[in-house]
Length: 202
Image 1 (cartoon, helix red, strand yellow):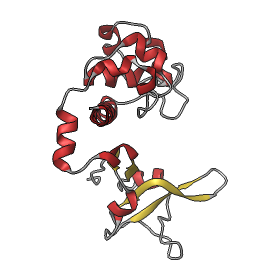
Image 2 (cartoon, one colour):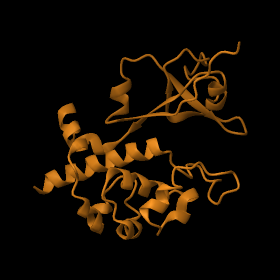
Image 3 (spheres, rainbow, N blue to C red):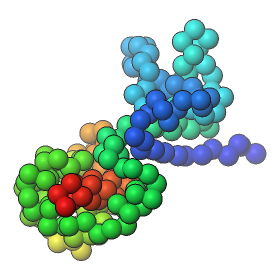
Image 4 (tube, one colour):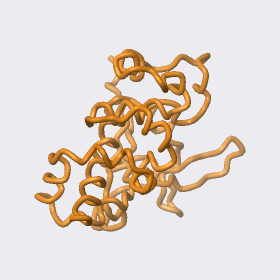
């Protein structure tokens, strides 16, 4: 019987990556280019016992090979928007309080927001009014889903989370589409940032 293999894609947003990893046992993931150049992965680590280079202490196999062997990489991402979060209770409040959605009608505010700062004209046209709609908006600014811009929310929802096929326009670009889970997480991050900004103006 073949061993079970986990197919995972885990991103964890942290205020300070170095602090989050301090005291933990992990191995730095690496990327290996076609010409054999080995570089530390920007954010990926393994908490499993992966094959390790005895000199560098980093993984000795690529992320693709590690995945094929059943190891899974976890990406810890520095997210500066958390700098204004005081504690867990404050974060819960920032996530759960409805933001002032009208802020998205103001270019000054949108230009300061995570992931969407360069897309004011598109977001002004769609005017999301919920976390789900904001997540779908994040989906339609990805290359493989550009064709959904300008459509109704119902039309967008019918296609935005469908995985593009290799021949689809925009498929060839890295990060050409978002899974719903990723978009919702990023959407909540934007809500946190909007509520932090609103606190500053109160």
